[in-house]
Amino acid sequence: MSKIACFVEKYNFSDPREEAALQNFKCAAEKAGNEFSFLFRENISDIPKYNAVFIRATTDPLFTSYIVSKTAWELGLKVVDDPESITICANKIHQYALFEKYDVPRIPTVFLSKDELRHKRILEVFRELGKPVVIKAPYTSFSRYVEKVACETSFRDVSKRFFKKSDMLAVQKFTPTAFDWRVGVLNNEVLYVCKYMIPKGKWKHGAKLRGKPTVVWGRTVALKKDEVPQRLKEVALKACSVVGKGLYGVDLKEVDGDYVVVEVNDNPSIYAGYEDARDKDVYSKIISYLSD
Image 1 (cartoon, rainbow, N blue to C red):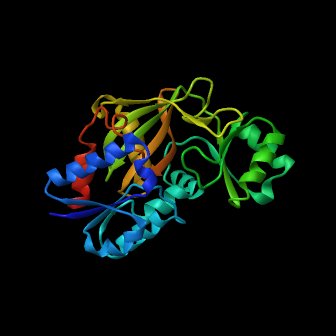
Image 2 (cartoon, rainbow, N blue to C red):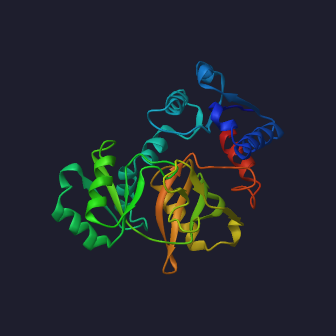
């Protein structure tokens, strides 16, 4: 029997789909003979009482979730997400550099420093990547700090705003598709595969309505992992291999019959009826990994 702590914040229970998934994890753990308890920030001093920690709150090196991860890791507990995975996935510049180093198929990307925000360099980027381009701040989640620009003026405006968060930005080739592939991976094994559909008239899975703070999300279409192209899974697994052996959600685009990685995310979304719709064993497999 293993004692598993699931670190959450109160907002994790605000969406019934996420709350149902959390209860599915609890049921899977208890069915296998383990203890499964929700751990909140006011109880993090209890971490040494557990054998494993499963983090479901948003991860970031500046958030409480990272302190929980680091503490559990240093105590020798099995932890998902581990602190190294959080660090790599939180910094897209570092992640893209690893993709380049290990030749992971990826969307064409160039890095831009504050000192390079000049007319000549912007024209070079447009010549290399075409127009429009997508600008990303390194520390992004849920499609925030990711914007599309098509001219030098908007390139400068967005870059200056993002440079308030970072000294370096990633600029990527705009690759329009009807959906992004999402491949869920744990310990070098594919758990589930989905299509994250792009809302009509938008260019990314989560897009704001014009002039409003509301984010519109596209549909999630789950597929049986055994019925999707082997090449898709191979590229996803290669991308994860340069990050670690934890739980990841890999975003990919299908381009000219092949697949390129957009990014690898730690702490991937798992909502009841969505990512788990075709592969119901996602819960038991994650619990098994934590309790081994």
